[in-house]
Length: 321
Ligand SMILES: *Cc1c(COP(=O)(O)O)cnc(C)c1O
Image (tube, rainbow, N blue to C red):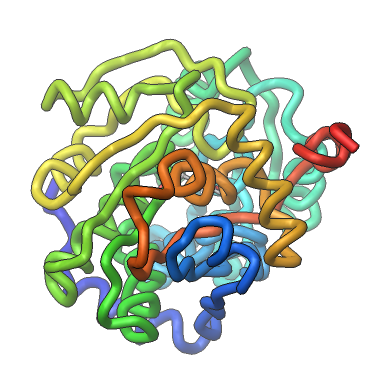
């Protein structure tokens, strides 16, 4: 599989121009003061599906051969990849089947159905859902779309980082949450091309360290996935995104789920932003080690805002008060 290049990202940006406006990136005085750095929050939570992945879904569907597209796409996901595919399929009039592990986040489940996709709940985890999705795709002659190892998804997601560096060419670091690694792989590819001095730092939950351990070991590994943070809950490293991380990632850190919940609360209080856990993980990593960023200009990717109701009620200071 060929890794996408900056040329693919520029092409994706042209495709997406008809579908999505650029998202804002702001700093907030209280957040800057808490960290002792200029913290720029890239607001992917304001995408129409509530997460950055829609950039990838639209790019993939736009690039498909029309005959293949007419047969439709199958995805497996805990939620945001599903919404991305369902949204893009609806835009292009293509059938879409989504396989989710049983008992999905009701907010994401409702959103997928509302977008007109067929939803199948199968298996206890994403691995089981993935296997079933492959079977559905084979049986029905539909295109199976991986959650991470898809060059078109990564090229689409890379447009977020084109926007980041266009808005702030002199960043010292960009901090990216990782599940399958498409976002961090895209960040590495774009930074290497347009901002080689900017460190790309990846973050994963300590309770689901597959991508982290894969990167440290230099080979894709499988690990238990026990995080309650949906967007970060993956059990194995993906070969394509891992290869892209190896070529440019400056560092990879782990944060625990409670620190992520605390950062969700901080985003709510200081940045007027409702983030889902995965959308607050980058900030959690910065708050865990502010000295490392002192006086610098740091972008944190707020990748999504699809928090479930229970998650919102439980988050950080809401219960501590
Ligand atoms: C999918 C997702 C992530 C992780 O992105 P990958 O590209 O899979 O590494 C982070 N945050 C949110 C909100 C997500 O939906």
